[in-house]
Image 1 (tube, rainbow, N blue to C red):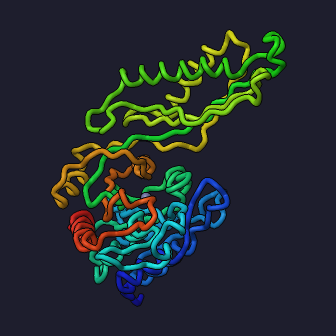
Image 2 (image 1 turned 60 degrees about the horizontal axis):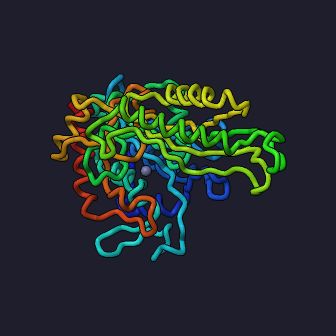
Image 3 (image 1 turned 180 degrees about the vertical axis):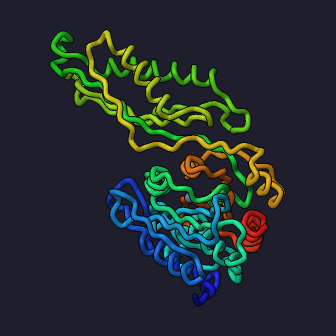
Length: 385
Ligand SMILES: [Zn+2]
């Protein structure tokens, strides 16, 4: 088979950024990611990788890509997401889809979060003789990380094994991360019966029921904080945020329905389904005497918390190569899904999270060479020796 080198680094970055691949839970924003997947698949095929393009079930136009070389059951997975967040073009100084160099920075939507990472990976592998791999090397590209994580979720559900050690190249300023909190968003609906305000007996007030729900959730939050804490997190306890409430229509009507949205951020070791079950039992108990009805719905599947042991080989290697101790962060990643597939996962990538999800997103050019070197050294350590 004829091996073709990938295009120059900045050309790859420019092509990846030029293909819109916004993912969003709102349908007006959501776009397919297939064109970004195809670019990566073509380059990696040319470089000699075996490439699989995997449709995400029930998500038309959305694909994951697995490019692999070498064989065996261990090996290294370099993983990233192909989608970006929505953007507000009026707040950008340059075209978000045109890679623009200015002040030693590369501007563009996805430059740092995280199309740039793929370009760095391919650059790091330039000239690598894949026949010399002693352990497998896998490049994984996912869909919908910024919205539902349907890509990583589908991969984890498929139960396939991809490798033993994984790096997710989210922007961490090239510092390794081995822990983050999880996230769940729940919608709680209390339904009663509306009626004229002049006689409370004519209805059953959902807002009054919701006041009991709010109080119970705040009590639960306090207990969770007493039961669980993790000093390595900036906010050491699990959080529960009351984020949105809507109920009723008029001051002179008994409120018939009230809806609350909350966000729960558990620490590693706390299971999302157990938390949801606990919440359900508590709320059912507190509303039981009122005769009001209660529904709870998850607003998306949720992301579990991540904790990769400090003793894991990938953690120790990442610490050694970067000179930084692996830390905890406040944002969620696809790490827990990779972990479910049997991979010890570290989050480590070029660019700063401060620039992600912002207008004028950029990748600082001084992250490029060190980023490439770290990737090369990881490949050497996990695949070549
Ligand atoms: Zn990201």
